[in-house]
Length: 196
Image 1: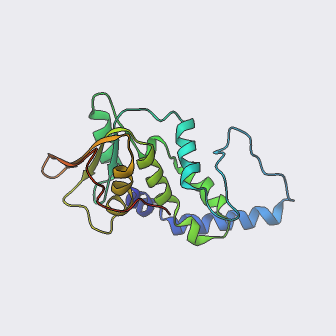
Image 2: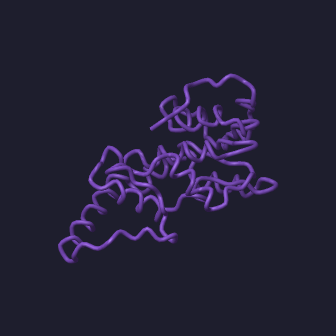
């Protein structure tokens, strides 16, 4: 799912745009205090680093992380596929964009300052945060078998397996319309717990 967000919005293009706006406004205005009011994303910037996974988890909790199923996706499936699948569940499930908006991503990239290496971790951290906050049954919507280097395989799936609130993980292949149980709570995790 996160690959699609990076692809769709072009994180490097976004970063360049943010730097351009920051430089423009810095030359036109004087320094002002940082707004830390509750109506901002209120994520913690760590000395020129982007918000942490734990900060993003707190952001999700403030938005009211429900206990319904959480739906992930991996390319070539898209966010719209995950959204449609989540809405068809009974009760309806949730997916990435229910908790992280484009405005959030822009705000977090701004919090990273000029640290491009940290900016590139925003989607990875948000994906791991979603997997760590999920509960019950999780689904991944695919088209075929996910690649070994996908965010799903490297970050989200391992994080779900280390999450004690996850009872099952199912893959739904949009091409074949088949469900496959790929992990059950109590099974040994297939990979290390992730940090970014």
